[in-house]
Length: 448
Image (cartoon, rainbow, N blue to C red):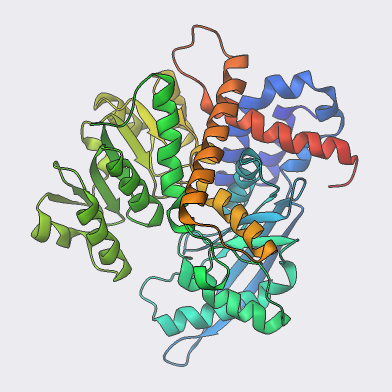
C-alpha cells in the first residue's frame, strides 16, 4: 500500500485522533524516497503495520480520595512495536490524555527509541488523572490502583514504562512498589526509579541535557557554540529546567521559562543559583511569579516566551504549544535554531514555516531522546545489578546524542540538494529511525 493510501485510510478510520494523524503525516512525507526505493517495504506493508499498534490496553481505575469518595479515571497502554526490543515509553498523567495523544506519542517513540541504537521498541501509556491539587496520599492511592490494572501487561522483557508529564520519581516509586507486591519479584520493569533501588544517575537531567547536547552538535557543524547565545525556554518542569541549566553552564544566556499561567523573563539570564531556586519552587508547587520579588525580572501573565529577541528557542512544555503565528514571531525576533525538548511542540503548520524560512530545526524524536536513552541504560544496569557513575553515564549520553545527530545529518545530506541552506534533521531522523525498524520487520516476515 502506498504511503498516501495509508494516510487516507487512517483519516477515515480515526477522524477523532488529530494528534496521531499529525505524527503519521510528518513521518510519511519525509520517508517517501526511502520507502519507494525499497520494494520490500511496500510488499510487506511496513508503514501500514507500523501505524496500527500491536495492541491497545484500556482500563478503568477506581481510587479513593481523601474524603472517602470513589473516583473513576481512564487508563491506557499503547504497545506499538517491539520489533527491535521490549516496548518502551513513558506514562503520562494529565487531564488531556486520551487515546489519540497516546497513539501519537507511542508512534513517535518507535523511531525515537530506534535512533538511540539501543534495543527498545515503542509504546506509551497514561491516564486522564490530574495530579494537580491532589494530596500525596491521593496520588499514592491512584498510582497503586493504576498499576494494579496494568501490571499483567508489562515486564522487564515485555514492556518497560517510565515517567512523563505528571509522572516523576515519586509516582514511579509508588507504581514500582505495587508491582513488586503483586508479582513477588524485583525487576527493572519501570525506569526512572530512585537511585537507591534500581534507578540510574543522570536520568532526571537526561532529556533536558540531551536536547542541549544536540544543539551543541548542530552549532558545531557551523563552527559555532553556545557562548552568549540568547535562549528562550518554554516550560518549567524537569526537561525545561535541566535544558536551561545545561545551556547556562555552556555560557548561553537563558532568558525565559514558563508555565500554564505565564512567562518569566530575566534579561540578565538564569544562572545556577536562580535555576536551583526555580527547581525548589516547582517542587513545592509554588508560583513562578514569586521569582520577581527575589531576583527581579518580569512576570508576563498569560503569555508565551517567543516575543523576545533570541538566537535559540527550546520549546520544552507540551505538544502543539507553538503555532504558525508563534513560529513567525520567533523568526521575526531572530531565532536561528529551534530544538524540540518536548514531543511535537510545533504544529504541522509551524514546522512547515520554520523549514521554509531556513531556521535550523531539530525534531523531538532526535533532540529529546536523551531521556529514553538513559532509561535504556537503566534497564542494562538493572539486568546486571550494577550502578554506573554520573560521569560515565553523562559521557555515554554525549555519545548517543552525537550518534543520533550524525546519523540524522548523514541521512539528510544524502537526499537533499548540495546547496540546501539547512540540514533537514527532520527527514534524516525519520529515515534513520524508520529504516532500522522496517528492516527488522522485513526480516521477521509476516509476524510483528
